[in-house]
Image (cartoon, rainbow, N blue to C red; front, side, top):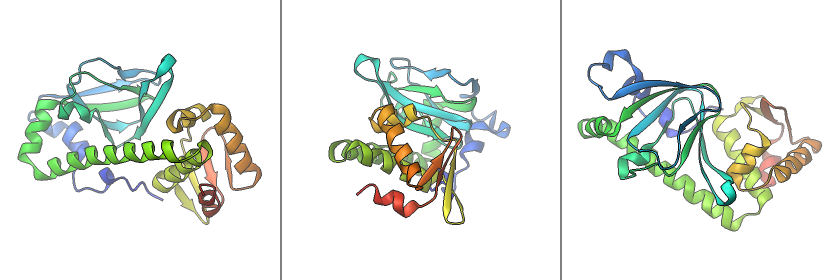
Length: 228
């Protein structure tokens, strides 16, 4: 199953827009950056003046709560954009961006992107959808935190990841690049122990199986039923 995120479906070549050498002269504000696994791309309170495109790799967007507990807001991969709040008045970063694996980024300063949005209705619409999608995702997460218990939140996250990024193989679905139990806990506002207990329970009932690199869903309908 392919990722259904809209940034892969819109008729806008964001890789070419941010990264292609043929645009080097036109996009003077464009730059290229490589980050090793474990590097921070930016931290809270740093200047918010660029927008980033992930050419390859994986980036975590998050913040620090009470007692410096890490709260994960999003995990993004190749073809996705982040740092977009700089376009709507964010002077300093509220979140951190962290390379979860070796990552290559292309970035553009805000003024350059604003000029492109002014000149291109396609780019403008694309960026509006990026921002709108992020708002909707945060609203959905807030509703989940308020109305659902920890078990339902974890299962909902697994189902969402599989439906967006999983590959169907017969009646099963495989999700590669599976997150650690702690990462799942951070993004679902639960504990690592709760995640581990639930995953082991689902595995014992032959609904899923997993290792450090992948999650295999043997029965997606049964997994969805766990959300009720």
